[in-house]
Amino acid sequence: MERAQTRKYEEYAYVLDFVSRGKSTTVRGRDGIIVTALGEERLTILELLAMPNSTFEIGERVYIGKEGRTKILSVLGRLEFGQTSSSAQSELASVIEKIVVQNEQRFVDYLNNAQPLTPRIHALELIPGIGKTYMKTMLEEREKRKFSDFKDLQERVGLKEPAKQVAKRILEEITGETRMNLFVRK
Image (cartoon, rainbow, N blue to C red; front, side, top):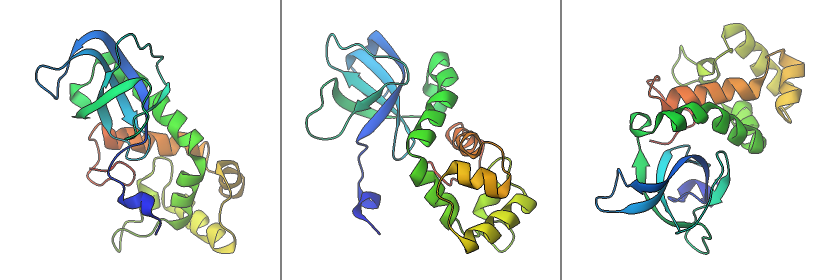
């Protein structure tokens, strides 16, 4: 496995919402430009403190790694879905889809390598739109040749809009509707 799996910190996050004069929910006494964002790698909701006079757009990808941040002062902490603003919650689905599409290879690799979770449940079946029939076809097709991208998967298996289905699953995991997480790191 490559080392990326062991990294604890996010490098990038996507802006869900921001308040120019806000108070931190996670760190007492911290205030300023408070940004709610979704981490690109671990898909967790983060609270960020922005540098004074920074401006943001919803869905914007911002660098939050250790060195050389330009707009973010610090990552204040993680937020639960219920702690986020209603506008952050309403932006979540489109931001997740953006992450899935921009990191297509990562998610296609997941679908190419997903394994059974228990003798009765396969990881693929937990993705909306994939039941036993699609799962069987996907397993047969990926035996012949791994899927190169979502379009390839859609053409060979017939699964409509795989990126949207994966995004839907991630949204369910973030909102706490699932017992088991495939994509969101706890």
